[in-house]
Figure (spheres, rainbow, N blue to C red):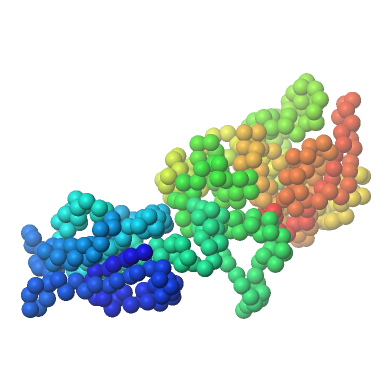
Length: 481
Ligand code: JCH
């Protein structure tokens, strides 16, 4: 495959003799030829520039010299050519364009790069070659910063394209991973030996040998980075490209995947003004947790008696009760270009809220460090002290699978892990969940809960069977954090 570069500084392209591109040339995979523009200048001083038409600072490169050079280089054979002209005013170079150019080269086209200097090349040069049959002109910028000329941009484009050509990269697996595995996301962190270096360890999951867990962890870290550094890229991910675990990671960054795109999410401790909102979301979610066959009348009665605004007002005033509320945010701290509906107009601190609550957690904190859970079945199987009870973790059904519940639960664990009872940090959190609710059991298991026993209790005529699950506080969650 043939690449020609025209420049007034041929030595600037010397790096093309090194490394990957140099090896590809030596292997005969790439035929790169560097030409000195001044070879086509006509005068004794080999002049290639002149003053700008209309006045102004600096110099502009002459179209006649460029025309002579490019005619000669393009005339070498009859193959179609891409004439690539680096300029700060060009279309943005991208991996997509690199793939595009590599495919064009593979299909038999040549690449000719015209490196300008000074204030650039007389614009008629690009205009003229755009109308020459068999020549496609691409004016390309490699980024929003100003270089002194096109040579560095030529190096960038040629290296990015060359490594995509067949046979240039020995380990083609890397390319496959690049284009599929982490498509649309930034690459996550990478590590090698030694396992401990200057007090920093290689994350334990990478030494686990559990390939599914490793892949999951890597994707989570790639998502973390993309959220933190390139939130604009998230707008291009369709909901179909984000699985349940991805959604949980995003929710932990305050981003909710909805059919309409990414929306800001806010999780905060509930306050005295939230009794009505809590009662509303509790009433909307309570039935989801009831075993099949529960009488609608019993559900209604329970909601009326225990999930009223008055009942929540009592909970909110109770120091032994910790309630977190998830709600739509009005702002998100990042820039989600391409994902409509998010703004940062109030300073982007994510403090605004709008719309009804999406879910909530309610935990019970013991008053004394050695208080037992109370229920004799539970006391026997939960030995940790002090221990909190996660009494409620409900999310509206339309947000099941959105990662919202994972984020809410992670926030509850973080809240509980930061609490002390008479100066003693909470050791663990326990919960009871219906024996037959496999979705709930899997959800809590993913969040680090383990089944330790069972409990039974009667509601009216119905005998309920719960499993009792415990999670230590201060350990990692399903995302490995
Ligand atoms: C170039 C220049 C016009 C400076 C001359 C030729 C490409 N991404 C990217 N940044 N800079 C370039 C580039 C490419 C070719 C040439 N210059 C210097 C030209 C300017 O107008 C503001 C400024 C810069």
